[in-house]
Picture 1 (cartoon, one colour):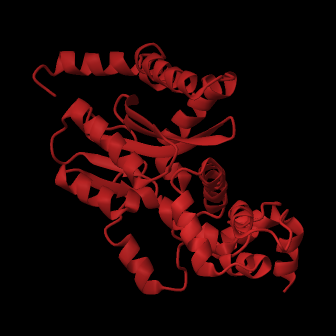
Picture 2: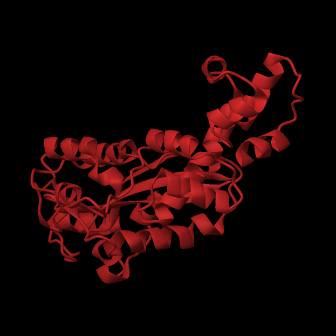
Length: 311
C-alpha cells in the first residue's frame, strides 16, 4: 500500500483522467515501480498496460533513453560487487543512491546485458564454472617470440554520462596492441570482436595462449567455443588476483594517464579517433623501458629480422 501511495504522489495524472493519459503517465513511471503497483495506483488493467508498452517501445524516445541511462549504472554496481550481486541486490543499491527503480526492471535489463551473479551457495556451479580454467601463464610475462602469449582485458571510460567499454589484446612478447575494440556493452560479443581482429591480423599458429581475468564475458560459451575453434589455449587469472594479468593492468593505467584522463572529448567520434591514434603512437613511437627503450614495433621487427621466415 505504501508503494501505491508513493506512486500516486509521483503521478501527475488525476484519478478521473482519460485512459490514454493514465497509460502515458504509467509509461513515464515504468521502471520506477512494478507494473502491479502502477496499475493499482492508476486503475489500469495490467493487460491494457502491457499492450500499450509493446506498441510504444519501438519508437518511444523516453523509454529508450531511460534504458540506456540505467544500463551503465547497473553495470557499475555489478562490477563494484565483483559479480556477487543478483538483480534484487543491484536494484537495492541503486535505490540507496537515489535512483528509483524496480527489481523487475533491473532483472529485465540485467538479463539483456548478460549479467549473472556468482552463486556462492552452489558448489556444483563453482566446479563447472572453473573446470579447465587453468592459469597457463603463471606470471611468466616474457615469452621468447611473438604470437606465443596474448593477454587481454576490458576497461571502461565514461564520456558525457555514457560508459564505453574498451577491450584490448596485447602480444606479450612486444607489448604491441594487436586489437582494440569499443562497445557500449561489456559483453562476450565485444571480446569476440577483439579476438577476431587480433587473429585476422596475426594469423598465429595453433598453441597460442590467450590469457585474461575471470570476467563473465571471457567465460561465456560463445567465446570459449570460438577460441577453441581457432586452436587457441585459454588461460585465466586466479579469482580476484589482478597481478596475474599485470601487463594489461599496466597498459590500461598508461592509456588512462597518457591519453584518456588528459583530454576533454567533445564527442564520441573524437574519443574513438583519439583512441585509435594513441594505439598507433603506443605501438610505433612509445619506447618501453624493459626493452631497452625500444618500441613494440621495433622489438617485433628486430625479432623477425633475426628469424626470417617466422610469422
